[in-house]
Image 1 (cartoon, rainbow, N blue to C red):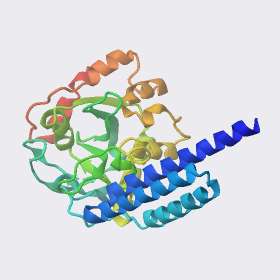
Image 2: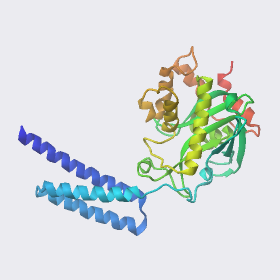
Image 3: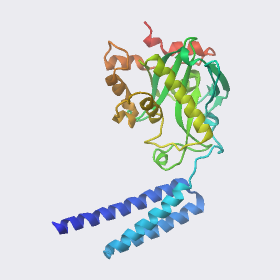
Length: 330
């Protein structure tokens, strides 16, 4: 029995050593560039050969010391990788939303994006400041956009107001010019987190028509005070990110986890669910929570939610948002 436990312990140590080498390797790959990356990866390969030799010679104590040294060096280096505001950002994330909280109870949002997309990469750029009354929020919608696996969707939260206007919030990776998205890179501090507030003519039309993604809109049944609190919490998050940037993380800090965490903080706590990681499951999750329209099956709700292609974006943002919700009227 003791021999079996010893073998299992040594096997676990080898797995931990391999996992540590793999983690450090990915961190170097995503955080370094050019000859420095090549040099450090070559050094890591040399360390890996040393680990293998120690394991082969059954020098387990020396292997633990080596692992501790590598972990300490990696942790020290990792702690120095800080998020920044001053990179050469792509146009659509060049600015992030901030807000002024006015004495009369209204809020003025700055850097509201209102692009007119010609293709999925080209747009007529426009940034605006807009003032809203949080007490005039009449609706909250969850908008999901699927571009690949049906298990993964980009999540938007859109607020509707008494005057017919809508403003959509999106937690996104803040990509630099020439940079593309990597799910794996999102685990290794490759991207900063950006909170974008945009007109639906911009952020929804980009996905439905310019990119041709599968976009669905789900009205969420939410009390008025919670709608208001969620709206204000998102604005405070925008101000916080402008003051102190944060890293995006594929699993823990993304387009779904950001609003989910805010909701848990504002309420008694929405139950954890696989949908937090696999956002394509959010319709089923919200249906089970009882916050989707009553009297319909989930299949009927999903049918009504699909937007399809919306056609040219109108200059009237209120009309565009109203047309988006045609399936939910009547």
